[in-house]
Length: 185
Image (tube, rainbow, N blue to C red; front, side, top):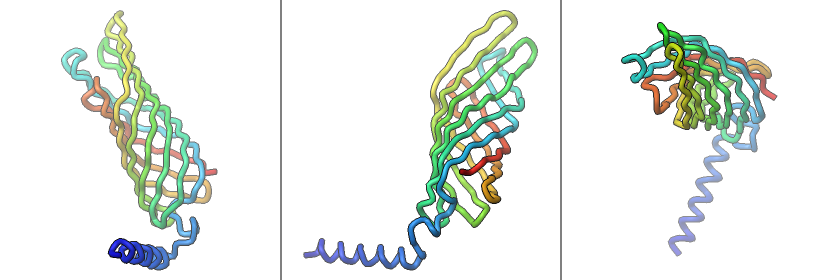
């Protein structure tokens, strides 16, 4: 008998909360549902502890993104995103490092009308090519990546500022601070 009463109270609470928030499908959703494609450019940083004692460098990198926003809840953004990132060519003395990655993310954010804040987490399948003088080695792996950012949407275009930290096994610090433009469809 107690379980039936709890189920009824639960149903009443759910109906009251949904009614109070004005829930009606996706009409009150945070970010609109739909796909997006985008390009980003930004400052990349890398630090290898094992190359020549410590290799630290910065460059300009770029990324190409494709994703989907799920406008399910008011003021809450949920989405998925895939990206290809070219971190650039890092050079210091006779050492050159080229690094790329394919990323998959889950995104969650808060929407305040056209403005929003978001966080993301996922995995990156990366590839490094390290050249010291005439000797070249290549390595790859799959490791976690995390990010935070802010967005501003105007019609079908979204501008994003974000910071991503790549927790790659071979590096101590690998990050990208970027500006991106997305086309929403």
